[in-house]
Amino acid sequence: MDIDSQYLHDLYNSQQPKTYNDVSALFESNYLKIFKLIPLLKQTAHHSVIRHENLADLHLMVDQRFAHTGIFTLTHILEGGMHKPDIKFKVYFDAQLLEVLSVCNETTLNSNHPYLAQCNDMNIQWELNLFIERWLDYCLDKYTPGQPLLAKSNSPSQGKSWQML
Image 1 (tube, rainbow, N blue to C red):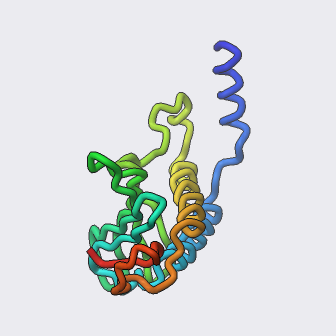
Image 2 (image 1 turned 30 degrees about the horizontal axis):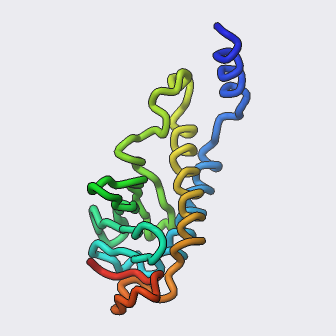
Image 3 (image 1 turned 120 degrees about the vertical axis):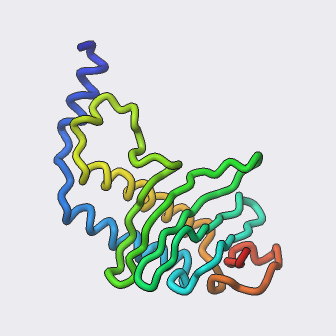
């Protein structure tokens, strides 16, 4: 094993494995953040968008919707129709949890990682949900709606309100 591989191996193995409590706390935190970004998510049954003057529009796709759960995708649609980062997540409205299902249709962020076989399910869940946590922080900073989801105004000067597609 060369020195770079040894360093990567040691770094990866030095981290403590994540526990259910660690991952669950992240699920709860992300639930609160998604509701700051999309206050009426529980009532949302249609695709919606925040149109922004200076940034890519932020799209919310409704994949499945039930009384106590929903599966959504939060993404930007870039030129050529490319969806990035295309985060699919499940919201448990009754338990107040948000769980990431995939990012760009991948169930791990780095499927080519040389030590992925040593990564347990809790670590993989941690990695996916840490990614959405950081991305939600970015979205809250850039796209926090001034009005509730499904606002009727299409005024480009608002730039930060959800509209139904």
